[in-house]
Length: 108
Image 1: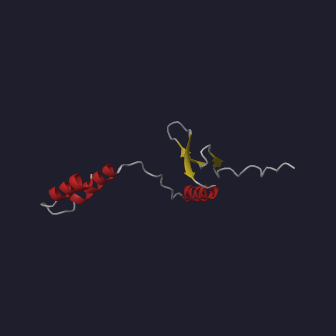
Image 2: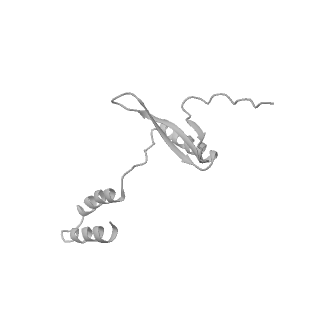
Image 3: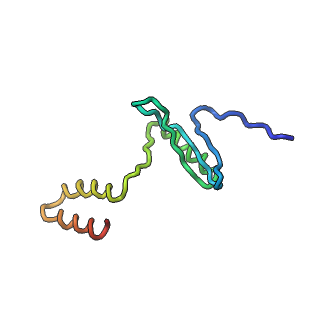
Protein backbone atom coordinates (compact mmCIF):
# COMPACT_ATOMS: atom_id res chain seq x y z
CA UNK A 1 0.00 0.00 0.00
CA UNK A 2 1.46 3.41 -0.94
CA UNK A 3 2.42 5.87 1.77
CA UNK A 4 0.33 8.97 2.22
CA UNK A 5 2.02 12.31 1.91
CA UNK A 6 2.18 14.38 5.03
CA UNK A 7 0.91 17.45 3.20
CA UNK A 8 2.45 20.83 2.84
CA UNK A 9 4.51 22.52 5.50
CA UNK A 10 3.34 25.87 6.84
CA UNK A 11 4.62 28.97 5.05
CA UNK A 12 7.90 30.35 6.27
CA UNK A 13 9.26 27.10 7.73
CA UNK A 14 11.84 26.50 5.00
CA UNK A 15 12.60 23.58 2.72
CA UNK A 16 14.51 20.41 3.58
CA UNK A 17 15.96 17.97 1.06
CA UNK A 18 18.59 15.26 0.88
CA UNK A 19 21.36 15.88 -1.62
CA UNK A 20 22.98 13.29 -3.87
CA UNK A 21 26.06 13.07 -1.64
CA UNK A 22 23.88 12.11 1.35
CA UNK A 23 24.03 15.41 3.23
CA UNK A 24 20.89 17.34 4.07
CA UNK A 25 20.19 20.88 2.89
CA UNK A 26 17.82 23.31 4.51
CA UNK A 27 16.77 26.49 2.71
CA UNK A 28 15.11 29.49 4.31
CA UNK A 29 14.09 33.01 3.32
CA UNK A 30 16.44 35.50 4.95
CA UNK A 31 14.56 38.58 3.78
CA UNK A 32 14.20 40.75 0.70
CA UNK A 33 16.71 42.79 -1.24
CA UNK A 34 15.71 46.42 -0.61
CA UNK A 35 16.86 47.56 -4.05
CA UNK A 36 15.16 44.91 -6.20
CA UNK A 37 12.53 43.46 -3.88
CA UNK A 38 13.64 39.90 -4.69
CA UNK A 39 13.59 37.21 -2.02
CA UNK A 40 16.98 36.34 -0.48
CA UNK A 41 17.28 32.58 0.09
CA UNK A 42 20.05 31.04 2.18
CA UNK A 43 21.11 27.40 2.60
CA UNK A 44 22.46 25.45 5.57
CA UNK A 45 23.88 21.93 5.52
CA UNK A 46 24.12 19.06 8.01
CA UNK A 47 24.70 15.32 8.10
CA UNK A 48 21.26 14.35 9.44
CA UNK A 49 17.72 15.53 8.82
CA UNK A 50 17.21 16.13 12.54
CA UNK A 51 20.11 18.55 12.68
CA UNK A 52 18.68 20.53 9.76
CA UNK A 53 15.23 20.68 11.37
CA UNK A 54 16.77 21.98 14.60
CA UNK A 55 18.94 24.57 12.81
CA UNK A 56 16.03 25.80 10.69
CA UNK A 57 13.84 26.10 13.77
CA UNK A 58 16.49 28.20 15.54
CA UNK A 59 17.00 30.43 12.50
CA UNK A 60 13.26 30.93 11.98
CA UNK A 61 12.71 31.92 15.63
CA UNK A 62 15.68 34.30 15.45
CA UNK A 63 14.29 35.83 12.23
CA UNK A 64 10.86 36.38 13.76
CA UNK A 65 12.39 37.79 16.99
CA UNK A 66 14.71 40.06 15.03
CA UNK A 67 17.84 38.67 16.72
CA UNK A 68 19.27 36.81 13.71
CA UNK A 69 22.74 37.82 12.53
CA UNK A 70 24.00 36.28 9.33
CA UNK A 71 27.34 34.48 9.55
CA UNK A 72 30.11 36.76 8.30
CA UNK A 73 32.53 35.94 5.51
CA UNK A 74 35.17 38.21 7.03
CA UNK A 75 38.67 36.76 7.10
CA UNK A 76 40.75 36.58 10.25
CA UNK A 77 43.21 39.08 8.79
CA UNK A 78 40.44 41.61 8.12
CA UNK A 79 39.04 41.15 11.61
CA UNK A 80 42.50 41.55 13.15
CA UNK A 81 42.98 44.82 11.27
CA UNK A 82 39.75 46.18 12.75
CA UNK A 83 40.62 44.89 16.22
CA UNK A 84 44.17 46.25 16.05
CA UNK A 85 42.96 49.73 15.09
CA UNK A 86 40.55 49.69 18.03
CA UNK A 87 43.11 48.27 20.48
CA UNK A 88 45.97 50.54 19.42
CA UNK A 89 43.79 53.60 19.93
CA UNK A 90 43.53 52.64 23.62
CA UNK A 91 47.27 52.03 24.30
CA UNK A 92 50.13 54.17 25.47
CA UNK A 93 52.19 55.91 22.80
CA UNK A 94 55.10 53.43 22.73
CA UNK A 95 53.01 50.23 22.53
CA UNK A 96 51.46 50.37 19.00
CA UNK A 97 54.68 49.36 17.19
CA UNK A 98 54.93 46.30 19.44
CA UNK A 99 51.32 45.28 18.66
CA UNK A 100 51.84 45.77 14.93
CA UNK A 101 55.01 43.66 15.03
CA UNK A 102 53.30 40.85 16.94
CA UNK A 103 50.28 40.85 14.63
CA UNK A 104 52.26 40.83 11.39
CA UNK A 105 55.07 38.46 12.41
CA UNK A 106 53.42 36.02 14.80
CA UNK A 107 49.74 35.83 13.90
CA UNK A 108 49.28 36.83 10.27
